[in-house]
Structures are given as structure tokens and as C-alpha cells.
Image 1 (tube, rainbow, N blue to C red):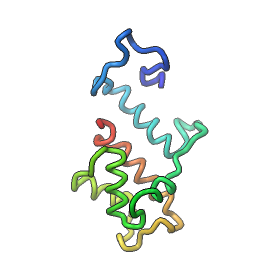
Image 2 (image 1 turned 120 degrees about the vertical axis):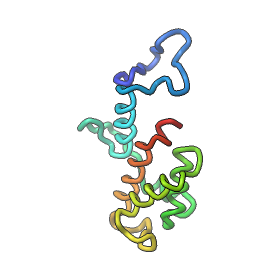
Image 3 (image 1 turned 45 degrees about the vertical axis):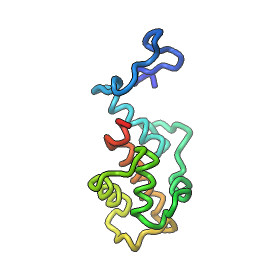
Image 4 (image 1 turned 90 degrees about the vertical axis):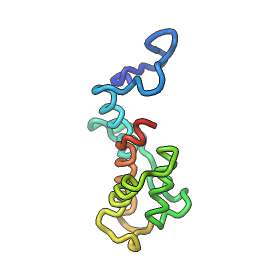
Length: 132
């Protein structure tokens, strides 16, 4: 957090942290993306951060994780606060499927965890998430 200029209990001034999009700059945005993705991988800059999101549990708790379109819509709504645009939805579906046909996808596949992790990494790198 310190690398992004957000030291715990040390706001920049007595007013606290400025709101809205004032945090966006060429230094903070790449760090934020690195840290966000680190929560999926459990590793930040080569260091084990002792925590990792459970991608399969997250997906399994959504409406229909075996339907790629529903899964993507639910992930987008969870992370963006709204359904994705058509272009973003297709990009997310393509990332989830990794070349598979939609009918081949289900959460019980041997590589399902890696595919859902790839979806989460992409989702957190998108402007829709970063600017939420």
C-alpha cells in the first residue's frame, strides 16, 4: 500500500484521502493492477503474500458457473457493479474459455480453476474495474 501512496493510518492531510479518480496516475495504476492480480495468484513481485482468492469457490457461488455467459455476467456485475458491455463480455468469455466451445465449459474441468483465475485477472485489469 505504501508503494501506492496509501500508508495505513497516515492520510496525506487532515481531510483524508481525496476521492473519485484523483488516485489515478502513471505510478499508482500499475501498482494497483499488480496488487489486484496478486490476490488471484497469491504472489506479488515474486513474493508469496500468504493469501490467495479461491477462484473455484467464488465461481461456484454464482448463479450458474457451468454457463460461461452467465458466469461472466455475474463476475462482471460483482466486480464492476453492473453487467459488462457487449465487447467486454465477449473478451471475458474468450478469456474464460481459452479456445474451448461454450458448450464444453463446466466448473468440473481439470483446468477450470486456471481458466477462472485467468478470467479474474483480466477482470481486475479492465478499466471497468479500475475506475469503478
